[in-house]
Every structure is written in C-alpha cells, then in structure tokens.
Image (cartoon, rainbow, N blue to C red; front, side, top):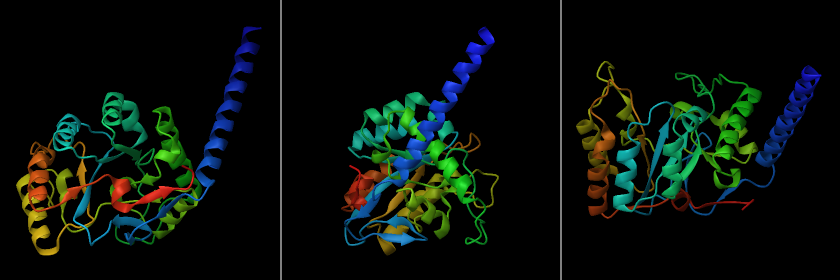
Length: 273
C-alpha cells in the first residue's frame, strides 16, 4: 500500500513539474518580448551599448561560482546611489541566497546567466555554434525557473548575459524567439579583464585595468557603455578590481557621467508588462 502511495505521489509531482515547464515555455514565447525605445548598438544580435550621444553608462555584474565581491560592490553602489544589473547562473542563485536577497532589497536588476554555463560558440570561429537549439532552450528555461523560485518574474527579467559573455547571431535569435534580449559588455574599456589571475598571460592588475578604462574614456568616451565587473574572482587573484569600484565611479562622475539602470540606458520595455 505504501509503495503504491509513493508511486502515485511521484506521478503527481512529475505531472505538476511538466505542466509548470510547459507554462514557462509558453510564457517565454508568448507576447512580443522587448522593444527598443532609443538608439542602441548591437553586436551579433545582442545589445552591447546604449545611446552614444548621452554621457550615461550602466554597471553590469556577472557571476557563476564566486561572490567574494558582493558586500564591497553593494556597499559602493549604495554609497554612490547607483543601480546596477546583476546576472547569475542557477548555481549562484542556489549557493548565495543571501546575496540575492541583498541585491533585491537594494532594487538592482537581477537576470539570468544560464543554468549550466555552457559555451555557446567557438572562440575562434564565432559562427560555429556548439549547442543545439533544444539544449539552449532547456538550459535557459532551467535558469529562469530558478529566477522564478527567487521571486523574479520573467517579465521583470527580459535581459540575459550569455555564459562567458560569448554568443553569436544564431543564439541571439533563439533567445529572441523566447522574448529574451541578450545584452553584453561594451568592448574597449578592458574592465572585463578583472577575472584574470597572475599565472595567465593576459593577466591585468587592478591598476592596469583602471588606467586602461580612464585612457579609453579620454580617447573614445564611455557614452552608453555597459561596463562589466565580475562579482567574484578566483582566490588566486588577490588584487580585486571591485575594490577600486568606488574610485572609478567617483572619477567618472567628475567627468560628467551619469550611472543609470540598465532599463534606462537601453530604454527597453516589455510588451507583457
């Protein structure tokens, strides 16, 4: 009798899970998704820059397994009255629930960064996709399911940063068909090198990263930039760039830049809202 009851309950839970997944798939593909209201810059179907005519930029943060910079970053953003955009894997959401709650409490944007952190396309041949459409959809749906468990509705998280910050037009098209818009950091400033460790050939110290950002700004400006800082880095990198974030924000504010929320920088709205 007990075995039959357990089997019956297992079947019920399986049906519920399948229905929930079907509903999520419908929610992701229903509606018109997101639409632009002002000029943005695209790369391979992903938004990589906002309006280049305005001295506005947005700080974006990604993480998969490290959260050592969370406290420092959130303190700095609160001190400077800046709203950032955070993108995490499913594993991060499960591993660091207190960080998620703190980010939500402070009113920052929270979005997905994949479930299993797969590499979507070849590093040397970008148009060579390494993941099937079905696997992509399964992975991203799993990520959004975890977001939902954290109280983040799909309609409130239409922007997604790919794992490794790397994707191609095909993947961006798959995401778009689900009503999801890929966004990524603006190339040029070199801020994304903050993950490197001393043993790497491409290692950049925090001072080098800071100087490159300021030198790039002086030559090209940072109008519309999505400036990436990793929320956490490998323990072998003891020189943490996020500890220079307050200094960087103050320096750019002195140059007349305004830090705005992601939604404001790229001025997107969701048809379902």
